[in-house]
Length: 270
Image 1 (cartoon, rainbow, N blue to C red):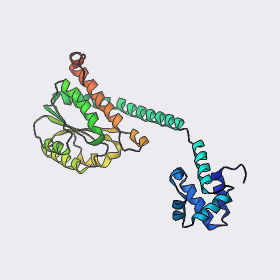
Image 2 (cartoon, rainbow, N blue to C red):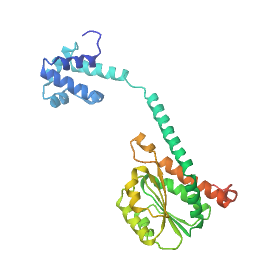
Image 3 (cartoon, rainbow, N blue to C red):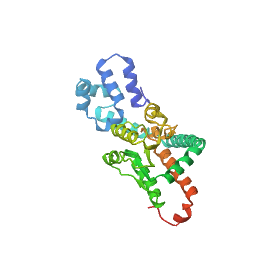
Image 4 (tube, one colour):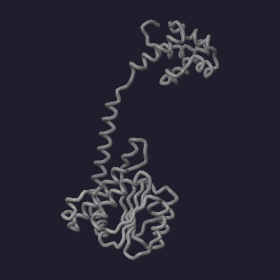
């Protein structure tokens, strides 16, 4: 087995099926190759129910002097095999842009809803905003713009505080709710409180949430349902970029409707 890489030799031993102890050791190394640097001969023997002497013979079967040389060879070959992930990252970034472009196309289709939301906000006596977790920072950006435009808006990060102000029954108030799935029990209570107070809702969520939206939507509510989730590319259930874009489009139309862009043009939002 000269001129064959050590890991390939190990896989050959697995397929030979002549010595069960060797097969067990070879399979263990194959499954734990990324951790070879932290494995000792004793750990491998214990994990494979073999002995240190058997692992030494196994190493010699591969043409090596013993386990120390086997470990060195595997570590060296592993260092040579480090994958260049730059292409994968580039691909992921391309996919992210594609998802955002699809969501932008959706925003163009619902432009009238965005305009209606800005009108409702300007006419409201109070704007109550709700959102937890990763959406907190996004909502704070949105709220800061509203404050600078002298729009009476209420947003507190604490869930119990949000639950408390969801019971407010002032006339002509609106409630803006931002969540990927509304899967927290606090949301059920908040929706229940708003329903009782007959408050009008602006719901910003995703198409992952159809069943929930059906149960809480009233005829005068406006629902923005983001069709594509950019977060799953990073192992998360979120559409934070698209949520922020939605809120900024609302701010843009608020500026246009109220001519407030001239008033706060020179002001720093933060």
